[in-house]
Length: 590
Image (tube, rainbow, N blue to C red; front, side):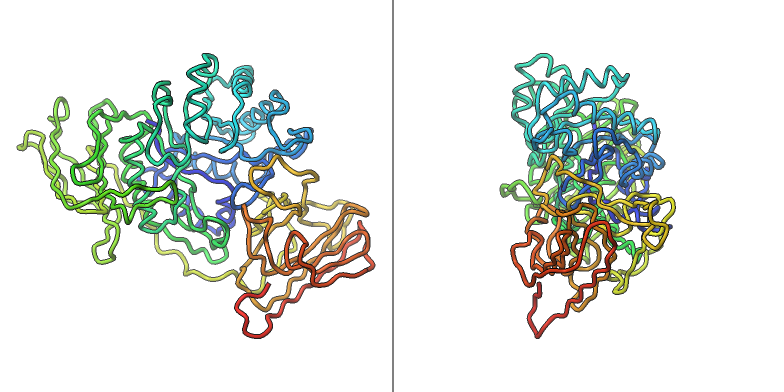
């Protein structure tokens, strides 16, 4: 089996800014074995400078001759995961790529050798600078694959002594990669795992015919309410029962991005307030624990898995050394819908299910029982240990009463634990007065706290030519459009704060680097981000190096409120101030 779980792109942005001890507690709930979600897999984005759902992540190579393995937070996150679980499986996958790889085209397969080289440097850098062994590498998230590229990537990995790194493809649909593998012997040989996204618990015949491992390499993506937990509990079992998938990877790991961004709170837990330290261990964490705490990669599914007579499903796994874990779920249709795909109707009702342990399992004297009931607060239990089942006098047979929206784990393992910490601080809104002078000599992260880049990449930059008050700066470092995954805006933008603020003043020192054509803006009440950033509205105050200014109602600059001439040139610092007052009683003010 593979197993779960966790996947991110720009979704853990705010986590790194959490104060201790809360940051370590959140990481424990996610990665610490026998504590919380106890994840088996961490899948990260190979930052490519482009917008990938909720933000941009920096590339380790913005330009052809640029290499830096300390940008962004993914390296840190992988190390924290490994610290807690040295056996965690690490996967890297690109969404976007830096523009130079495309040689003028919005396409990563212009020069196959160059793109393969770029990806392999990331794997080599992970080892060299962070002692991280990447276990699997992907092709291009939910976009085209190129069979020749996959073959070249394999050769280049081998030439670097990275035979152990396996290839997963194509992180999109089962077709056409599985059909292509059946027709192309070399492609068949170099793809180790077929990964599909949001498969709705089903695989296809061609994928099964390959005999390769089948993974749901991105799934869940659902609000982390009890319905989201129901979705997660159902697919963790049924992805194997219906589709023979031995691993299910959740997007996303932890909702550590501004909730107003697309797919707000679609993480296994919520940690989106570094300024307060507040976080919530949501029910999907405990649904994960039902599987992750009582199985490990390398365990085997037994053939006796399937659907229960009156709805729900069960799986059984063994380590081959005598241990046994059975996971039963009875999630109802109403309380287990995932965000996608469409879920055909099914019925679940109260039932009695009898299980009989045979062969070597008939000798098992006792099974530990862990229980979750989702739904009404009065009956709700999350990952509660019940009395053990004693099997000595029952010939290995036992009967359970099952109601809807329940999860049972029955296991020989005695290591399960519902980890806990004292409650974190109470929730608070983003502070109404906030300033940052970027005055950090040796920043631990390349990004300033709480800034969430949406197009372009903003990094700490020490301006050696200015010993004065602008010695420390935050600088947008891209000068060409990346190979995009989403519709990046034409103008670079990073967001911070609270969209709901009404009367506010924004003040910022700015510097235009490009003579004649350069420009800069500050903005308030920006109403969109992530994959929707192109259509963001708000109040935008621009100055341009050609000596003009503009106030617009949108990032694209179509809605013009004011414009004029102003004494502005490049290579000079200016202070911009934007004051926004909401007039009258109108609900929305742009």
